Length: 269
Image 1 (spheres, one colour):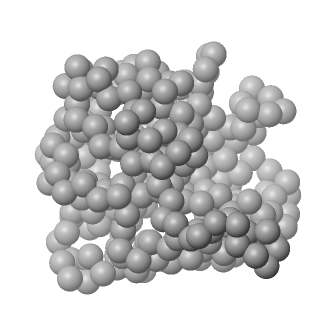
Image 2 (cartoon, helix red, strand yellow):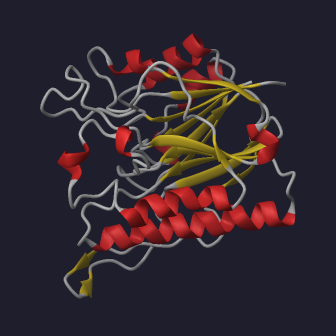
């Protein structure tokens, strides 16, 4: 069984690339982030014609998550228990009522409870979005911990764009991130807390590349000035089945590429 996670940065702009990735890697399940469309706008037909089922969650042209599966698609959920809302603000006044953003989508695929997760970026340390990011990670940790506390044998996989670089080597130049998001102690602690819940990050030894994201600006990709911010946390029942992981660096090449690349996980039957 092969499961991949990929921040596609607009599924409507990259439908053909996504179909190619499914075929190239012979994927059973693909977790997508930043789809940037509502479910009625999601280009499901090409994937269904290829033998896949599609679940999509999006509220507007921002955020958005999806799961594409040929291993079943059951018990679809558009948020996890305790997922925090977010409201845009201007100083001390709220511009919008708090709402649950389209940042989490769960389903049972082939006996595994998979989640496509798009962690908030945080924007900057002094931005309210940064605390929202920490709250989101803490709530997701509590939800995962509750699942494993009630059933230690649960098959659970949280894959996605975590917007955290947990190690210094996960960015091309640690000095370039001084006083910046992605590498703060609080973000890294929130990320690593999933290990305390009994999960294992199963892509650390992935081959193919050191990074999963290269910004479009400043020739970041040709210079290999990237970041590793796309990961997958697995429960013991899933982690023990993982046999290999890959980062598809070549997907970043060519016209119309996303700024992220797929991260692929192979599991024994």
